[in-house]
Length: 58
Image (tube, rainbow, N blue to C red):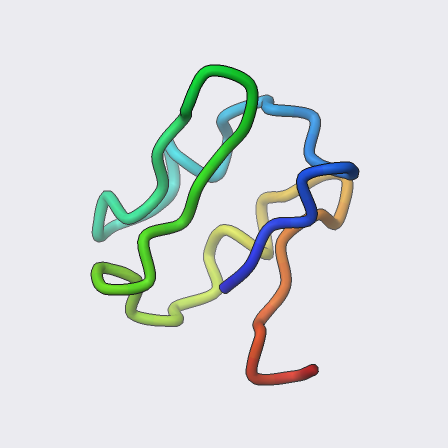
């Protein structure tokens, strides 16, 4: 998973929904830790601005 930091509203909904605790808020942005992410895509479903995408789809 990847986050488009320019689109991200830093609402933290993705952090709340992540079952693996792979998403973390830094000072001004959100970061997905690839080593913890299981590609469940729950963060994509909850992102209201469409800032999260599956990097396998690139």
